Image (tube, rainbow, N blue to C red; front, side):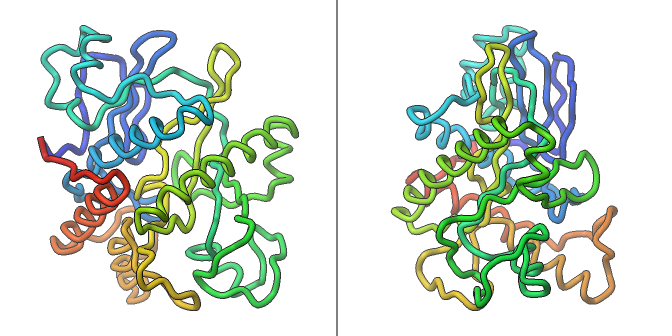
Length: 305
């Protein structure tokens, strides 16, 4: 499989995100192509991560298949041959599509990321440890780092085109989207996380937290979109050895985050673009974490072809 930082397809590209290129197929369909770009702390690194785009696309496709009986989603196909059959203009571009492209229903995206936290970690732990709050709202006293949250906390965030996403209160989400839409997105996010957490635990993975995106289709349906419970959108921990009260080893991009934390604390990086150059061992370790997460969750290794 090629190592790809950007795609070049004979369709109109309407967006380029931190990781994905988005192409217009027609009024009802989009093509999402996941590159091997990687972001951390909302900054895109210069070095790509081998197989990352394929892991994100194929793991999302696997989750959509598992969740199809519970809610509506935007995936039409994540198979290159099927995509080319549906969009003949892509004939001759199978190499760019293989593994990393998803043909989707088009939606109007809600401008909020729906974060569900089943464990207290990352930025949520840092805010809680300092102030006893999450997005300014008080949490119970005495919670431990990496401790399980029962019930999970719904913690929305604004979507930033550039720079850092910002945690917001549910009240702020209601003001942005309306009370009924906000309640439905929270219900769906909790539903998906609840299903995913059970499936992952059976496979030896704790999904500590994750974020979802939703959009409204032309038919009026609210669809689960973008990626679902991947190493980019989630924090994965191995069940074996889990112990609250400290940071946990993980199957996501934690090797990258850990290295960047060292660079930032040493004064070598201020947290903004441009990021420091990644050592090859960090790139390889991150790639292996992505592939291992895919293997554990789906039960199959992701082949490079």
